[in-house]
Length: 267
Image (cartoon, rainbow, N blue to C red; front, side, top):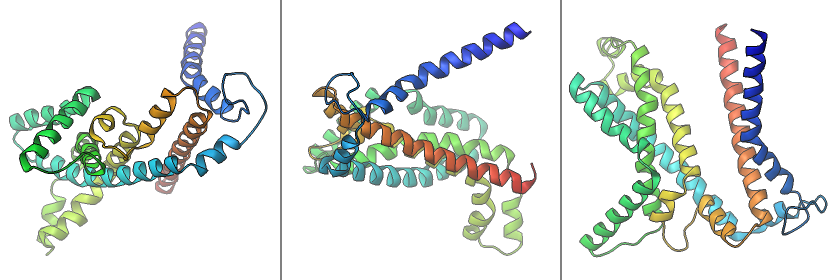
């Protein structure tokens, strides 16, 4: 029994080391004073200073956050409404629609990116105007984020009392008010989870963005790709470190909030 526990612990440590060792090395070399190569040449913060002073990086960060927030918010609204509609369908129809909704999650990103690019080209030719840019990039991120919201919200209906909405109507609430006071609060954990998933997928996406963006519009993933094509740039290490620490802090805040909620409930 002790041998099994020791092997399990060793395997866990090995897997964690394999996953996080490259990130640790990246963080360490983001402070390396040498511009090229992987030999330590002293501690410096000039690569972080270069990141904050670079106009191209600032534009990419602004585009990434703008698209991520707008896409996640829009996908959360549309995905929640779609989940409500799917939940109210008949059993057979529900399975078919749910399978179709889950298909984009399993579809390779390159297929989604190329398909959307062809769709935009056909649409531009049909209307005789339009071009790739911020709009096509935003619509693409909304499109591939919606299925994640649907899959995050749908399980909440299993633990929801279906008669609360009717009770709110019986107590005099109009359907619109009953929906926001009786249904939405019960779905909120799933909506928040879907929003965070959509926002994370938007920031992480490269393939769809590569095929649906236009000249002069790029997010962080496209910028990092273009920087690495010219060789190992220490600014990439610094920028990646900032992104990793930002996500780590966000996860810490969310977990801290959830733990405080559990303590307040006495669980």
